[in-house]
Amino acid sequence: MPYTVQALAQLAGISVRTLHYYDEIGLLKPAYSAKNGYRYYEERELLRLQQILFFRELEFSLEDIKRMLNRPSFSVIEALREQKKLIRLKQARLEKLIHAIDTTITAMNSNQKINEKELYDVFKDKDVTQYQDEVKERWGNTDAYKQSMKKVSKMTKADMQKLKEDGEKHTTAIADSMDKGINHPDVQELIKKSHDGINFFYECSYEMFRNLGTMYVEDPRFTAYYEKFRPGLAVFMRDAITYYCDQYEKKS
Image (tube, rainbow, N blue to C red):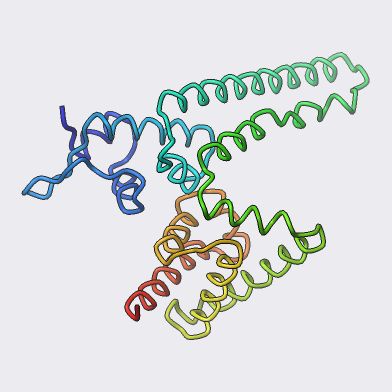
């Protein structure tokens, strides 16, 4: 049975806007569109949406999810097995956190000396993040990913620190230029430098760069990072990148 956008949104417990956005970035396309413009989703799309929601629940970014789902070797059944393992690891971690809370409360109520080491041991559990990395490496190993990892592997700790500092200076410069508007030459020059910086690590097409800009708003982790520099910067970055890509695509 085909589902309209509204019907699928209700079934999955997400917003219509989210489905429209997934369509825009090429993450989840409808099976077909009717003559009246209505978009319809069938079983294949329903399974893909379930995969997206599972990966989102496990805190994968939309860019990573798209990369993995588009791999020719991607298997839904294998992915479900991997997701089940990740959820169990996450469950075990939550149980450890609850135990740590109970231990601290007990110690405080009984005026016992708190074991400082035990206060933080639970936060050092890296099983979930390590397994996430394994999953991304298994299905996210695109040419761009390979190019990026090859560059990073050659960088020293000092190189990485300088890259971080330069990146923060660059982002601050964009934040300071927000009042000029997205189409101002100064802003567009800074956005070009952003694009050039990504191209240093891997070939980033205008389409990919535009999707990255959208992700700055869609992914709360990116949004939080940019909002630290100046409120509204994430949206400004997205719009400035979109304008930049539109201009260069017109020339090509």
